[in-house]
Length: 378
Image (cartoon, rainbow, N blue to C red; front, top):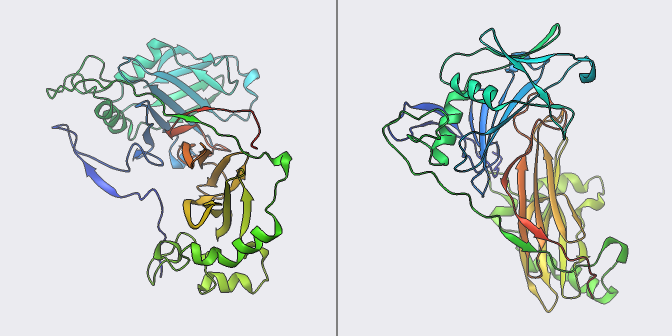
């Protein structure tokens, strides 16, 4: 049986931070779901902002609830928000309160920007952090309704956050102030700047000339190494783009249906560059395309951008996939045209699969500042 390669291999490991107690968890904070321990996760982006989220346990998935801490580098107290799914309209809930170990910590305030969220005050946030290293029953109560967020994994995840941002042993540590292995808090990093270059827009409806199209169609299977193991895999490992090669079993099964999805598509980016796109794989609820950038003047060496894309539109390649079929967790990546290549401009997930339609949060691992150019390509 072949095994599927993914960009976020999750390996269960024992993590040891400095001389802190060992904790079992998996994942890397800067990839995919980040570092995960039980019902909590922490994801950090390339600016060193970290987001830690906790969820209702799997056993309580019918009453979804989640807390999000957003911790900026060198800022002592993170911002905290909570959300839950209620059968009762939120507008009809009179008193929404935070309870920790059966003690009332006061009303939660509706978020001013998103009516589905509630904000924790500074005192409530600090109280929750103070409970992180002891067994804590975290409950949101509203009239006769209640939702519980699991505390399993909270301490380990916040400890990982302390380590990543250099908080361990400092006054701004979330859970490790007393640790003797004092770190130096790390400063925030700037977002990379991408100057989006001019492209043909969808309204231009640009196509290749018949002669250039025929030339590309005739030679693309030579220019792209469709026999590369990365693309077609091996006996034991699935490739990233098996539908690109007529010799693969995957391609042959699909061709029995006469699928037009096995054809190459050529998309003019501007006067000098073209995208070659090909379906790479199809699943029950996901699919992906490969995108290669062709320099029209030197077309014989296309540059692979990604084999995980879904769409190209007005200078951006995007990839959006469900992490499971019911759609309560997603991941997204985008690449933006800068005049020379498609540079990665964002990457994120919506967190763990815990019953929120469309996912619970936006947890980026990569962010950038895209400076748009609204003119048209010539």
